[in-house]
Length: 277
Ligand SMILES: NC(=O)c1ccc[n+]([C@@H]2O[C@H](COP(=O)([O-])OP(=O)(O)OC[C@H]3O[C@@H](n4cnc5c(N)ncnc54)[C@H](OP(=O)(O)O)[C@@H]3O)[C@@H](O)[C@H]2O)c1
Image (cartoon, rainbow, N blue to C red):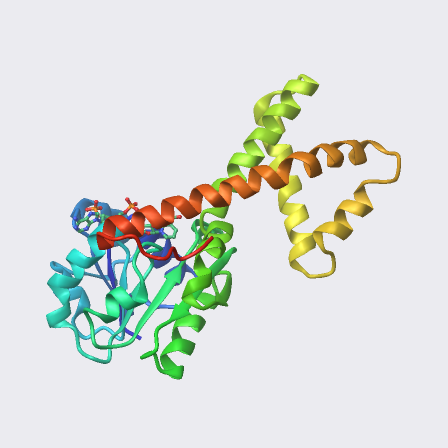
């Protein structure tokens, strides 16, 4: 499967490296374009069989799947450069929350999907969200889903449900890291611990908790109940969290939803229904 990538930033880079690491793609199947050539030095050194394209049309030309991995406001600019060069069968994939499948279908007559990856793909874990446009064949949908399935869990959703799901899976690592940092900081303060020590305790505890939940044998509620023995210490901490967290998290989703709508408005020049909460 020949895959073109336009944009090798934080996320484009993480995706390319994960797909190579997990054997989902071989070096010879990948062609990458990045505006700043020096950003590709590490990739060239580690994977000399990957082709570095000199232009965006070169990366697009003949690709079975073409991934656009630039910032949302740049996507339409990229499309204006490449749309005339793409063969109709190429499966166009955007990783941008701010660009809709319909935006791209208006500029390209072929199949379009959206993939929302997560930085935790670097650890081979996390959820990659995928939505398919109406022109994507069953075989193309399957090929895209299989491509990401070795690098974490793939969940296919209708595009209108991607907003909050993106917050959970793709913004999630950033939000969870911030929660972990605060948990550790408060613990260190309360117990006279070194902050680094506290962060290590929290990271390992979070990993263990996540593994126990991920195998499906325990729900968050069941796990909380097992730890919080009646009349015990954990129960007191849980009371505080139950009182304060719902409001905090509702405000998080309100804020991300507002920002998502603002990005859409800036791109389209009009206020559109937001793709999420
Ligand atoms: N970071 C995440 O966890 C994450 C997760 C899911 C989705 N995304 C989405 O992925 C997109 C990229 O995010 P990122 O974190 O990878 O950002 P990033 O590290 O800043 O990379 C941005 C990429 O866009 C390219 N670019 C910017 N302006 C350009 C222009 N005018 N012409 C051509 N190329 C241009 C950059 O090229 P240069 O190297 O030349 O600057 C770079 O390849 C965003 O829309 C983001 O929402 C990110």
